[in-house]
Amino acid sequence: MTVPVMRRPRIKPEHRAYRTVDGHVRIGSVVHGIGAEIRDPDGWVWTLVEAMDGTRDAGAVVAEVARRHPGLRLPDADVVQAMTDLTTAGYVEDAGAAPPAELSERERERYSRGMTLLRWMDLRPRESAWEPQVRLRRSRVLLIGVGGTGGAAARDLVASGVGRLHCVEPDVVDLSNLNRQTLFRETDLGTPKIDAALTALRALNSDAAVTGERREVRGPADLEDLLADAPGGHDDRPAYDVLLLAADRPAVIRRWANQVCLESGTPWAEAGYRGPLVSVGVFRPGRGACWECLRRAEIQRRDLRLAPGQDEDAASPRMPWNPVNAVTAGLSGSLLAHAALMLLCGIPPIDPGCRFGLNLMTPGDPIMQRSERRPDCPACTRPTAGPGRREPS
Image (cartoon, rainbow, N blue to C red; front, top):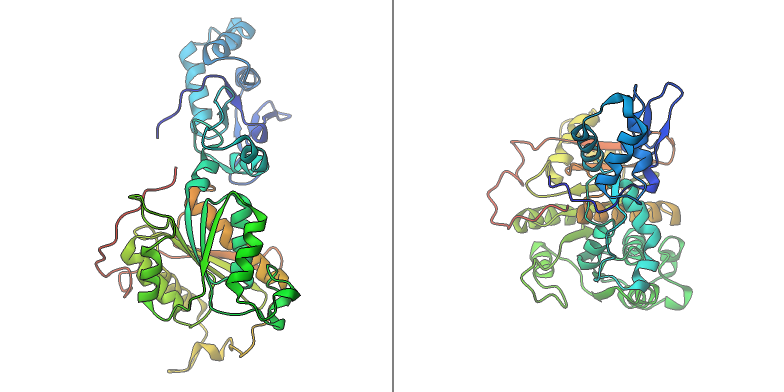
């Protein structure tokens, strides 16, 4: 990992340090997965984090620590190493970094709160705290399904600053959709969902390029065609950086997406709800379990005690209607958008090949499924010709 040179190192405001009653230094907030505690028997670490307030260059920070602790005879190299360690851990930003030219002043104002959240969760050293937002602006996302889950995901992605979103949806708006598909209004009844969705999304953020088509995915070939051809994408990059699946039919569509993404090397995520269970699966070909690996591992883990030949739907029946409201659909869509941001920006860092979410029946009982790649997997153990994708940084 390359540690950028900080012109004026500053502890991120969200990571502001404090001293505990026993003199230790806690930094990174009290959020699990971010914060850390540093022993500081001589007190100079606390002086260091106070001096890293964005008003001094690195040399002046070292001099300030030496000035305030003359009796320690502390080597400058130790202070420099401590600054490097804090920077490597993601607690430091450069107060002297220039705003990115790629983002207009209007965009920086619009995304200023989102930038600070990404900065808070980001544990990688950056030249600028705006780098993840710039990455979002450059990204291309393909979204299959713009109903309850997909509509919420599209809304959150467009609001968050994803640069290009292409939506695919075959249906029209009907009255039973309006209890959870919040992109649509009563005036949209009878209108193709894709038309109503594009109108709503473009009104939300004119800086995002939102396109779409009324199309049904009927097999892997349809997904291959969609992934190969992005509207407005004519450079040497892959057509899309991420595939998001929010469609629930046909039932085999997740298997198709897994197959096509493995072959093309495309990171992808899928989300939805099953009654009070809301979850998202996150996958990156070549890293961790694929969708099929995870599904097989979960079937083994659950041990439904079914009779030989008995279908698993006997334990959790599927009905011709889908029990859902705006809360479950909205949560699943927001989780899908969150997964996309993770895949696009690497914030927060996550090992792919997992499913996570929540059970609304028992708050505090999260859903977390993870598996290693399975040697018996019929999907990801097959040779594929797909290109590798650059990891987000």
